[in-house]
Length: 164
Image (cartoon, rainbow, N blue to C red; front, side, top):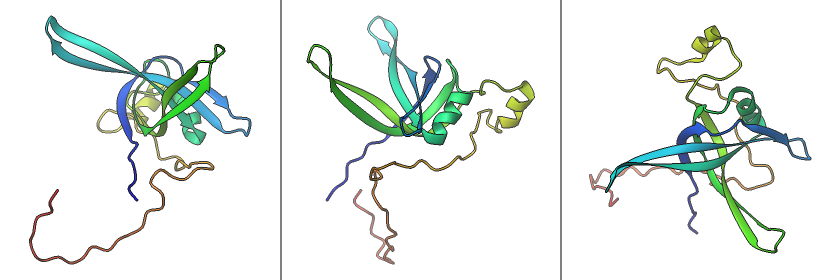
């Protein structure tokens, strides 16, 4: 049985303040949108397109995002594309999409800390690095890749090149 791949990676800036809420079970969820710019040469000159991507972060990652991110923050987001469907008041079927973040890398200084703390958080590359928090877990769902297993590599000394 083949497995599909649902993987998103994008870098952009927050378009609004993060919105932290809690599920009825008490799980934190933080939602925000990022804007990703694309420039290309069109017939009339340089064209700039902006794509707006809604993002949700859950659990500890949600709390960290709500605490340190703000409108304009630059972030790298890794996650999966999720869809939701519902019926509106007029009976029309609606669908929305968002990225469910598994990891968010802060690329600009976080808010709410003093300048000397910013320098402490900045890495040698000049980018903010969030320390590893708890690993992301899927509550009540199967992990997207399922269970992984180690497969031993055969010792192939034929020198053949793989066909891919």
